[in-house]
Image 1 (tube, rainbow, N blue to C red):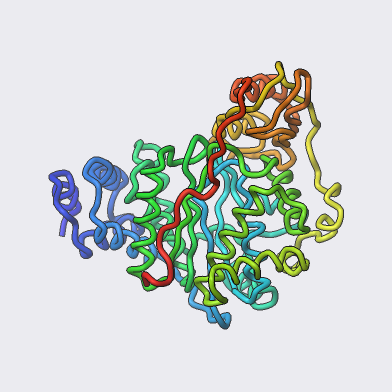
Image 2 (image 1 turned 120 degrees about the vertical axis):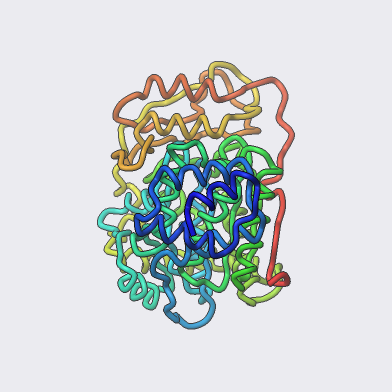
Length: 434
């Protein structure tokens, strides 16, 4: 078998078989397939697409390119994945809720890049907390607390890291088969029983159109089902930031407040919906019963207690949970409304880019970020504001004036209130489809 023939076949629109895809991925990881040939195949896939079977086979090859976590923690194991948004700190709320219900999780999360934040960066705003745990350490934490959240390791799905680096420099990132195989290739390495996806759509999402988001959700669900997993995907609105906080320490503070029962309604609603979906797929009751279990976990403090135990087990200073003023935030500056009226819409991606200007994110992997930088919104879409009223507080050590002007440019204020848009736009998959 030659890589040349595989590239030519895909270039000409042929469907690749399992053996061809395995040959490509194994050669990529071993170094036998050079980057220029891998890039050529990625471009052929970008233009010609992949069938469901090809996408599944690519996913399984990525999954099998490194180690897999096969530990038995007892009972159901579950994971949740978001395709990335602005102010999306749901993992810090959802996973403690479900772990407090007895559902175990070793959650592997990523770092932020561009306008979207990363769960690992957010957690590292907690002084001392380690996300670079080995698989053995992660298993130990999960056994003691029910939950651990760690960074992506070199041991799991190494092919994905190689592929993403090539996609990033060859303009082949936005291909649904390549996105789906990347997401699911990593998720399947931890061998969870249940996986729930939050597929974002809108101005702050990677997938801008609802149709594209639904296609991605269906593709991921099909792959999960082919692997024997209970899968579900919620397609959710990302035309506005989730909650009021954008930036690492700010988002952890908001997540803690939510676990204390004082969270913003949109963050609470989405977190409970995702947690209830996981609980339902884990046979904890019907949809209504599972939603009540999740709400009770918040109101009783069970979810907060679980989060505290995880923070302590990973070396973090849990005092910040009781006193969030212990988080280190950058200098603050206020942004005031230039006129009176309703906030009719915002550009969520633009808000994410504004936080990037303040130092809260990275333009490329390896960039150093300011964990105390970001944006705290004081008003959201649909709110009425008076001229001169503070609509946001910026936190940053530099670039604050430019960021303030940018944020106003991404905010539309008018005389009429906007029409409400649902937070959850669709649900795809479920345990009945396994």
